[in-house]
Image (cartoon, rainbow, N blue to C red; front, top):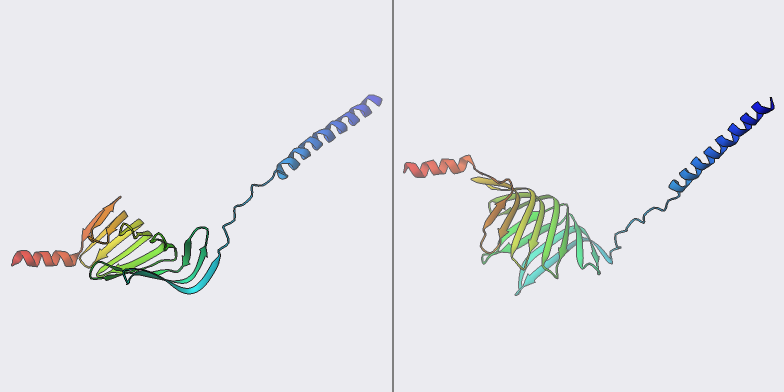
Length: 194
């Protein structure tokens, strides 16, 4: 009887020791320090219903209207919500209009990036894109993502489109699909029959 009591006590003590070790290991994992979450810097200036204007030689180059904006002195970039860009290009100052959900404007660098639900127009051209980058020093626009540029007689779809604002040349790359639309084909047929 004494032997069986010793075995019961020994099993009990062994079980208790194993339980304490397992519990301690769980406690160490749970108490492991979490990595600190990096916070976005607080903006220095916040505004609603604003307009940013960029000009040169007494002429407006572009203006951005936005529902709201945040500016950080460290980054020198204006984060805009619901931006609407109106730009004037070429000697004839044709109007380009682009709108999106989000954007960043760097007036000092004369650059702009717009993202999410981008739609726009330039003369008879209509465009959609995921990302719109304007680089003023190069006088170029880059459209990225699912890009579509169209007018009544043709359309171009690609993953990247570069537009030179001085020469008005469009260069498309990445899965390019260009299509002449029925209106263009009809006018070509009429010209051939003459």
